[in-house]
Length: 148
Image 1 (tube, rainbow, N blue to C red):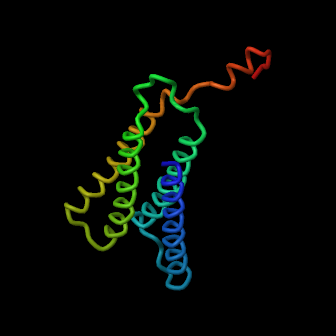
Image 2 (cartoon, rainbow, N blue to C red):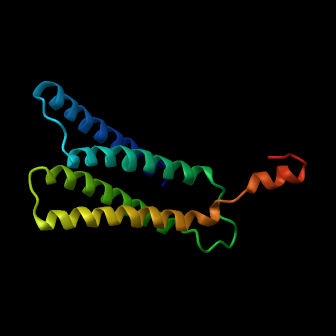
Image 3 (tube, rainbow, N blue to C red):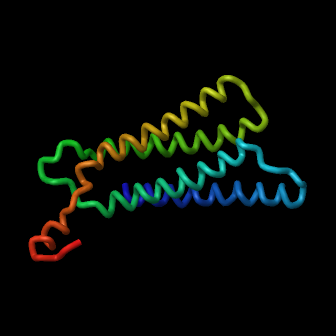
């Protein structure tokens, strides 16, 4: 799962860079300023797709393993969170770019649904990871007299 989150983050990075490059060329050579929808697509590709996915992947790797008997942490739930976030972000980027040319009600509903999928995915991730966010190593060092 760690590699999946990180490799997906890198994929979104390149999507965000491509959108940004395209917007830059249009602005500089055609005088065409990006719409708010294009800016939103670019922002979601980089901040949610790249930055957030990278943070989540590193968190999976960084935080201590679940405690024995921990029933709240579930690899299956992390997988569900991954798919909600990935598909929601991809849909959001595509929808925002399509919104420049088309403003049908189904597209608007789809964009909102993809935004909701992003929220649900991030929420599932952190609800599942909550018990792994603990001071495992620090407790041992504090007993030995270290101060933080």
